[in-house]
Length: 371
Image 1 (cartoon, rainbow, N blue to C red):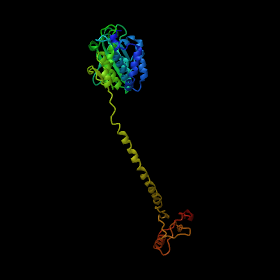
Image 2 (image 1 turned 90 degrees about the horizontal axis):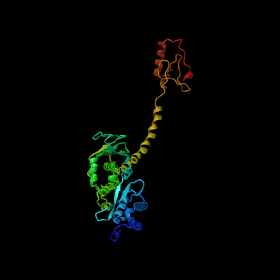
Image 3 (image 1 turned 120 degrees about the vertical axis):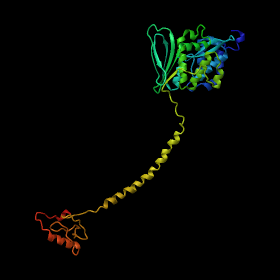
Image 4 (image 1 turned 180 degrees about the vertical axis):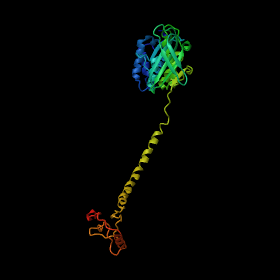
């Protein structure tokens, strides 16, 4: 390490720790709620311990890499390989920290949105069986060959959403190579494009797929940072300003099976609508109070029908025309007819009926106690 670079590079682990402490407030403002800032700072120190070459990188590039982790909520130097710090020698001769987002980091951020249930990514070889269809009824079928798969021809990424639908993209190897040609140091020894080409192709397909999903701010920032860092562009201003514009062209080979519908925005009107039922229910007691008034009329109606007593000839007993005994019951003749009161017109009619109609000895008289 020469003296001209001593003021610009990280230098030692102690210097790195001091720089992280100085950036603590900025890190606190960027990290999501699920990320612990003290743990993130410790993991940044661990990354330098694992790869001491990072201490020879510029201090600004290292701090930008840490802030990128803070904004995306991804932790470096863990077995999950969500995000990587890779030293890369720049044009000035001073190494810089390049942030490389792992495909597992993309998956993790997409899963955190709560919209995605699972992912599938794959490399399609010449000997594999692969068919897909785009349009109103898209589908994808893939069966890898067990032996002699041949050369790589394409890559795919599929997301299974929580609502039971799916989305997928397919990108051929030529399109991946065009993206690789723009990547910084893609052809250098040790580059992931050289040592892990298929994995980088799957990550490229997955990154395109994530653009078609409902992205969280952390996922959108991670995609934008990864694209800028991949081509060697500075993303430090984007971290502070919140710009998440991406470098790649819009996805034109995407497939959506029953795409997710954004939730309605009119959620604030619900409390106003739900308050109306209590107003309607307050009228119910007023209506129910009328019920006792209506039910009181029932006894009056049941008492109105008079009790009709008839004799053997079907005549209805009337106390005005018929005699009444001391017990209040009608007085009957021997033939079972009502006895007419004296002096009433009905008595004459009764006498006439008795003279014109003969007595029937087989007809028994009605006992007085029947009534």
